[in-house]
Image (cartoon, rainbow, N blue to C red; front, top):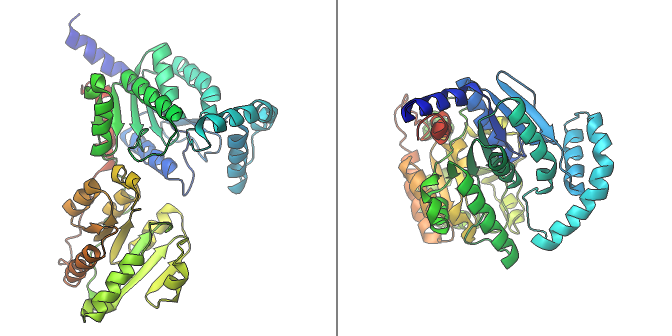
Length: 435
């Protein structure tokens, strides 16, 4: 039998068996890792690709065409309580099996919580105790359904480790997607946790046929840390699910105001202080278009300067909505705002809502601390400035308002720069004989 025939038969077998999709979070409103995973599951369903989703007990999910969910509780007492709270918050009954599991979570989970706090100094979000309960289930699912291919995303790194161990112990092919880098350059970690994270990353990259990072910077630094497996590391922008068609730009004479809308929470160095200073400066200089600006934040504001925002006649604070409703409200805006922290960690990450923004097709204004994100937004027609540079924000705002005052003709709505179906299938192409 020729190698080409072997490869073709392997690809056919892969498509015939379901994909084991592992993510601790799915189906939880307002939870970014869950929304990230849910979007990819929509792609699989739309493409007619069968999948078994292994997820945490706190996820709100129902089986649908081609997609079967298996929920498993975490052994940690803290995780267990959080999962129960999540179920009750959504008026979902706590399954009897979950109730019977409580003594084990309380007795053994409390010890595990204590040990993890000591090792990680309380800063780990890896949900490691979930590995203890979910790994046996993952291995059973792999054997029971003849699974060949495993895809893991997170969020919590426990999902990646489950996939890595399953493939290591039972064979198959693994694709890992890291929503955030395991070893960000600016992450504050002890020497012990950093060594552990380094070994985990190497283990996962080594056992994956593709390790996907969602920024070029994160992929490059991962390649530098793992030169022996550099060819297995790739950067793929994820994209987001397109819930509605792009929006046509609205001329000022029709709306009477330029509404700059920010989705999400403002706190710490992610604030609007410099934006308002830039806006007020343009007004003092007599730049007429600046008089028509109104800023809307859809979500909470925890900045020290929040009382000052609320006193402004050009600022409106709205309560947070679930994702679909929030995006529907955002369609009424003139321009969508993306505000990053000034911390170094922002240089290696791209907020997931960036792709929701791009899907809406509206102009974007970003106050950023990330050159890669700046290039991405500008390539899609947006306007950006360094987050801590007042003069740069003022200059970009002037240009942005000038463009907004003269929108393109009707019928020329800008389409999203990334199609999530194409992006995710590009991630999985190595499972379909594409590599």
